[in-house]
Length: 133
Image 1 (tube, rainbow, N blue to C red):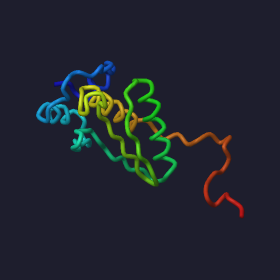
Image 2: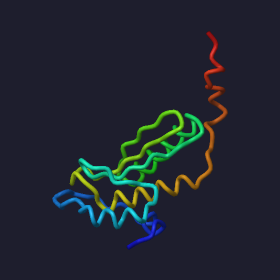
Image 3: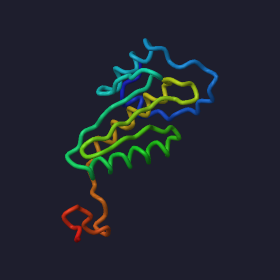
Protein backbone atom coordinates (compact mmCIF):
# COMPACT_ATOMS: atom_id res chain seq x y z
CA UNK A 1 0.00 0.00 0.00
CA UNK A 2 1.27 3.48 -0.89
CA UNK A 3 2.25 6.05 1.72
CA UNK A 4 0.61 9.48 1.88
CA UNK A 5 3.60 11.01 0.06
CA UNK A 6 3.45 8.34 -2.64
CA UNK A 7 -0.28 8.92 -3.10
CA UNK A 8 0.28 12.69 -3.31
CA UNK A 9 2.89 12.11 -6.01
CA UNK A 10 0.39 10.33 -8.26
CA UNK A 11 -1.93 11.99 -10.76
CA UNK A 12 -5.62 11.27 -11.04
CA UNK A 13 -6.56 8.93 -13.86
CA UNK A 14 -9.80 9.80 -15.65
CA UNK A 15 -12.57 7.49 -14.45
CA UNK A 16 -14.91 6.64 -17.29
CA UNK A 17 -17.37 4.78 -15.12
CA UNK A 18 -18.50 1.21 -15.73
CA UNK A 19 -16.39 -0.10 -12.85
CA UNK A 20 -17.58 -0.84 -9.34
CA UNK A 21 -16.65 1.54 -6.54
CA UNK A 22 -13.93 0.50 -4.12
CA UNK A 23 -15.28 -1.91 -1.51
CA UNK A 24 -15.25 -0.84 2.14
CA UNK A 25 -12.32 -3.10 3.13
CA UNK A 26 -10.10 -1.70 0.38
CA UNK A 27 -11.19 1.86 1.21
CA UNK A 28 -10.27 1.32 4.86
CA UNK A 29 -6.81 0.10 3.77
CA UNK A 30 -6.32 3.32 1.80
CA UNK A 31 -7.73 5.39 4.66
CA UNK A 32 -4.67 4.55 6.78
CA UNK A 33 -2.60 6.53 4.25
CA UNK A 34 -4.57 9.76 4.80
CA UNK A 35 -4.75 10.32 8.59
CA UNK A 36 -7.51 12.64 9.72
CA UNK A 37 -9.88 11.70 6.89
CA UNK A 38 -12.95 9.51 7.42
CA UNK A 39 -15.27 7.48 5.24
CA UNK A 40 -18.87 8.67 5.27
CA UNK A 41 -21.70 6.48 3.88
CA UNK A 42 -24.41 6.87 1.21
CA UNK A 43 -22.54 7.06 -1.09
CA UNK A 44 -19.19 6.15 0.40
CA UNK A 45 -17.12 9.33 0.38
CA UNK A 46 -13.92 10.60 1.89
CA UNK A 47 -14.22 13.63 4.18
CA UNK A 48 -12.17 15.85 6.46
CA UNK A 49 -12.92 19.04 8.36
CA UNK A 50 -10.01 21.44 8.73
CA UNK A 51 -9.92 24.11 11.45
CA UNK A 52 -8.59 27.67 11.10
CA UNK A 53 -8.34 30.72 13.34
CA UNK A 54 -10.63 32.90 11.21
CA UNK A 55 -12.83 33.11 8.11
CA UNK A 56 -10.14 34.42 5.76
CA UNK A 57 -7.81 31.49 6.42
CA UNK A 58 -10.67 29.01 5.82
CA UNK A 59 -11.64 30.82 2.62
CA UNK A 60 -8.03 30.93 1.42
CA UNK A 61 -7.68 27.19 2.04
CA UNK A 62 -10.96 26.47 0.21
CA UNK A 63 -9.69 28.44 -2.80
CA UNK A 64 -6.39 26.51 -2.81
CA UNK A 65 -8.29 23.21 -2.64
CA UNK A 66 -10.47 24.37 -5.54
CA UNK A 67 -7.42 25.31 -7.61
CA UNK A 68 -5.85 21.91 -6.90
CA UNK A 69 -9.06 20.12 -7.90
CA UNK A 70 -9.25 22.05 -11.14
CA UNK A 71 -5.61 21.26 -11.95
CA UNK A 72 -6.15 17.54 -11.28
CA UNK A 73 -9.55 17.31 -12.97
CA UNK A 74 -11.05 15.66 -9.87
CA UNK A 75 -13.39 17.92 -7.96
CA UNK A 76 -14.35 18.05 -4.30
CA UNK A 77 -17.36 19.25 -2.43
CA UNK A 78 -16.03 22.17 -0.39
CA UNK A 79 -17.95 23.78 2.46
CA UNK A 80 -16.37 26.53 4.49
CA UNK A 81 -17.31 29.11 7.08
CA UNK A 82 -15.76 30.94 9.99
CA UNK A 83 -12.82 28.83 11.17
CA UNK A 84 -13.47 25.63 9.22
CA UNK A 85 -13.37 24.04 5.77
CA UNK A 86 -14.85 20.63 5.04
CA UNK A 87 -13.51 18.82 1.98
CA UNK A 88 -15.31 15.76 0.57
CA UNK A 89 -14.27 13.50 -2.31
CA UNK A 90 -16.02 10.68 -4.12
CA UNK A 91 -16.14 9.59 -7.72
CA UNK A 92 -19.53 10.59 -9.04
CA UNK A 93 -19.40 8.34 -12.14
CA UNK A 94 -19.19 5.21 -9.98
CA UNK A 95 -21.16 6.58 -7.00
CA UNK A 96 -18.42 5.70 -4.54
CA UNK A 97 -14.72 5.70 -3.84
CA UNK A 98 -11.82 5.25 -6.27
CA UNK A 99 -8.07 5.54 -5.75
CA UNK A 100 -8.32 9.08 -7.19
CA UNK A 101 -10.23 10.20 -4.11
CA UNK A 102 -7.38 9.10 -1.85
CA UNK A 103 -4.80 10.69 -4.15
CA UNK A 104 -6.65 13.98 -3.85
CA UNK A 105 -6.95 13.67 -0.06
CA UNK A 106 -3.18 13.19 0.15
CA UNK A 107 -2.61 16.23 -2.09
CA UNK A 108 -4.95 18.35 0.06
CA UNK A 109 -2.93 17.32 3.12
CA UNK A 110 0.11 18.82 1.40
CA UNK A 111 -1.69 22.16 1.18
CA UNK A 112 -1.85 22.28 4.97
CA UNK A 113 1.95 22.35 5.05
CA UNK A 114 2.02 25.60 3.09
CA UNK A 115 1.90 28.83 5.11
CA UNK A 116 -1.21 31.00 5.04
CA UNK A 117 -0.79 33.91 2.64
CA UNK A 118 -3.29 36.73 3.20
CA UNK A 119 -5.21 38.29 0.34
CA UNK A 120 -3.32 40.99 -1.54
CA UNK A 121 -3.02 44.35 0.16
CA UNK A 122 -4.49 45.84 -3.01
CA UNK A 123 -7.91 44.75 -1.81
CA UNK A 124 -7.67 47.11 1.13
CA UNK A 125 -9.13 46.36 4.52
CA UNK A 126 -12.22 44.23 4.00
CA UNK A 127 -12.77 43.46 7.69
CA UNK A 128 -16.13 44.30 9.27
CA UNK A 129 -14.52 47.07 11.33
CA UNK A 130 -13.44 48.81 8.10
CA UNK A 131 -17.06 49.23 6.96
CA UNK A 132 -18.64 52.59 7.40
CA UNK A 133 -22.41 53.06 7.79
